[in-house]
Image 1: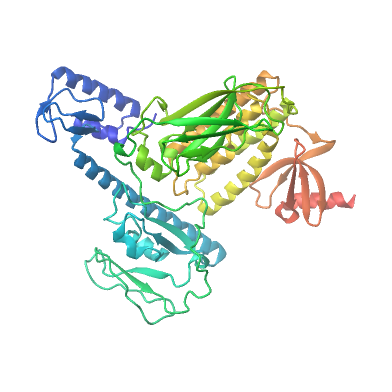
Image 2 (image 1 turned 60 degrees about the horizontal axis):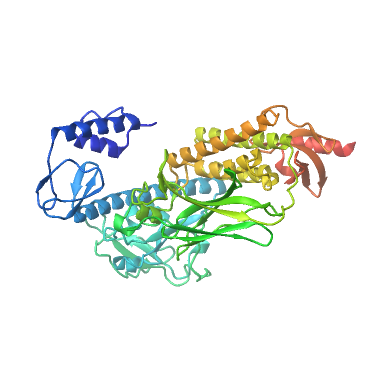
Length: 574
């Protein structure tokens, strides 16, 4: 179950239990319950943090009204706080966690940039463009400034959030950019005064320019901003740059939960499904969950899921899925439209700031506490009337078996990659390969029948698992990955059971030919990636390979290993 959490250890110490080392989460929970029961039997009294009046026993809920003064105080990890105390605690925790996130982000970006420069002998990233949030007027004079990557590495405090930023209002961000993404006449931020010594100028000379223009100094006395002389950044686009790396989105300064007042009511999800003329289904609706909340959608029948979709809540609380169903539409019958909010730790930081890092601010009948965290689930039954839609062409169980084996091989590669301690560049190459191969594996399964092994393999989603496994992601969480990987295992186990129930053994002998053409194993030039397929042809430097499902793959001749290239040349001589 893993080691006891920091909060469990804090709670145990406040209950008088000093030996907190080598405890599992399960054992820590048991100890807390035992100590609380002993405390209740003893009749121990506690002091209100407002009036110091006595009360007892210790409240089980997070909030309690003092029986003496009538004010509401908060019970957090065994300690009692006033509203102002909770606000201060949230601010301190948020600021510390945010600063740690900034340091980690800069460290990873610097590591990746060094690897890029080593491999390609040129610079990629130059620094971070700062965007001051609308609720942080103290940071207005840093808005749009460029913090050089080298400066951020030495002094991460140059990036937001700043000390004056507040946990419940700050929206300051910073984006990693390359040179051609820096708008013309962008100012460069530099430190004035060494924060480690308390003084001394550390103004840096601008590239290729002898004059420096001081513009302003922050209240903390650390930041001074300079501007390149005319022409240094000439030829660059004036359009504000877009974030360069899709895998590393803008880093918001918010990082820990806001007070419960930010979500004062029970969670609501209103579902309005639409059966379109082609008999496919779109799930629409509204919710009071925060803007940007990630939601998972699915349509089910007889308790069996028909694929999944993932979208985010819009600014007005609305959401909408992609259409569900095969091109021929769903058959007449009873179905269920399902919407689920995944655990809080998988949500964006801005959402966690409202619902709580562990979903502790969520309440209502739709909220469920599971093994991996708190989720929100809502369902609505609906009926598709009329004649039965034409059934999709059945997929042979042998195809399911092959798809299972291919997906299982991808999962094994993901697990092996995690153990290899690979660098960011290798991970990027690996993820591209997994995405390409996962698309090939899942393409013929898109119209698989409800509850089939194909649907289970689709839901396992090896490409998504590989993305979550990458330890170099800015938002990587080991706990999140374990939860995602466990869910994938459950889907794969169900697929395996369905295949074997139908009379096919997984991991059994693979097909040896397609359309009479023999399979062989093809290997790429790096020797790391392989695929089983039949030779489909060669023209203009491109090799066509055909999979067992008759899907084709086109690869460049020179991307194959020498042995495979020679095999193709020998074949051409016959």
